[in-house]
Length: 385
Image (cartoon, rainbow, N blue to C red; front, side, top):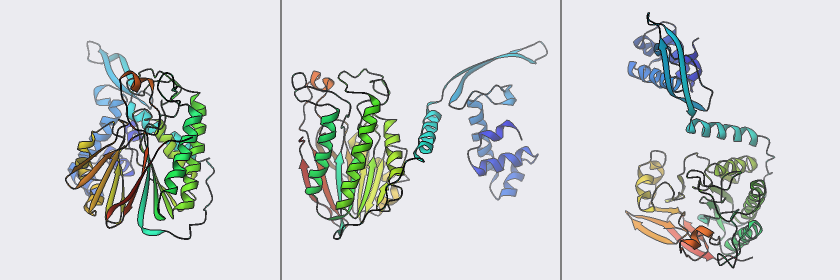
């Protein structure tokens, strides 16, 4: 079997490449597998293109493969007078998409060792028609602010206590709903790794608190505690752990951790998709979430009603509510029968917000939806220690 086989990602691709390299032409391969010649041709091209990105294309004298997680950015081949290759210079660069895939695979493997929680008793009374959403967004755990400089004190300890108090207050204000959703809409962490910089633009963040490792510990502790508190109040708990622009990578490990941590609890569901748009159908009510860093809120309803993975849910709904964060301000739009809401943050202002004159009221929303009637109840919780 040639090296091309190693670049197949599915069993179907492997079967097509195996038959094609055994000497069958594309039509014969299609006849053997009961598929069209065009499908065979397209599959072979996909695999060949993937191989070429990593330096393997014998038809072009490219046989020096780069490691997984990299892709070829240029190849210079030297030929003698007889047209035979005598030397080759291969330039490579990191393959960002593949490295993200590798990171997710490693996180999944690491989480296999996470000890899951045991199932807990269901509350005696709950209303099957109700779904209550607790929204937290732009929390920026790890950001540091002071009363003197930014107008409010904020550090890792204050953030931890404020979050747990807010969850308590939101639950106190919630009816006995069958379903409770913890919607963490992104930017939970102020930065995304060891260095306090933004993930994409690498802007240095002024005013950071404590080590990243400690922020990981706090995240695990408070998320576990929040889910346990919600299990005491709701019949089932759904977790949305959204990607934000400050924590693109960290949102992945938080989501994977929660999925494995609560894997033995049948009353907990983690929405585990690796793309930054999330949806849940409660009866005839569709609820969706996106941090707001990749698409403006006025465009969200177009994506949610057209995206193939969400369209079936949209088609079954009479009410649609989409939620976003990112800008730390409250705002509501209604468009094409859809309500789009931008949520405030419980967090204090950071140095960037203060220096640019940005102000907004701090808070978190708890909203209850009826399966057939849409939104029926809401409360705003303000931060307290």
